[in-house]
Image (cartoon, rainbow, N blue to C red):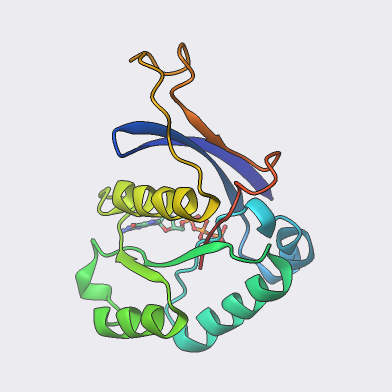
Length: 162
Ligand SMILES: Nc1nc2c(ncn2[C@@H]2O[C@H](COP(=O)(O)OP(=O)(O)OP(=O)(O)O)[C@@H](O)[C@H]2O)c(=O)[nH]1
């Protein structure tokens, strides 16, 4: 199925609210999930034929996502080094070939997760030309300090994780 959560990160000392969609990876949901690419973050962490899978995913974004969508590649489960299937170098090269960022992450041990969200939020802000604006209030929500990036905004929802 498809679900979303709201994740707030700080970029340049300002709060940025991201709407994070979790699309199921299974093939049978493909038709549905591709429809959500405009504002979706799609995680990709299969361990076999990673080059091929990343290229397929990138091609799918090319055909289904808005132009200029921000992307990044995450190699997840870096907490279990003993079971590593893809070298860090392979991940780095793949990301470089696709011109995107690469992080090795662990959702379980919270390694690089915050960093990845922050980097992505920063990229989106740069691309959209949208800067977090301080209104002088330090209370998120009370003084309009938060920047909302969501699917209802025309140019803002441009994030995808391969
Ligand atoms: N050790 C470890 N386990 C993890 C990590 N991230 C996820 N897992 C485990 O991997 C399994 C699959 O995680 P999911 O979050 O369901 O994976 P998914 O990509 O959403 O799967 P699909 O819905 O099929 O796309 C679960 O048992 C998680 O607990 C991690 O960083 N480290």
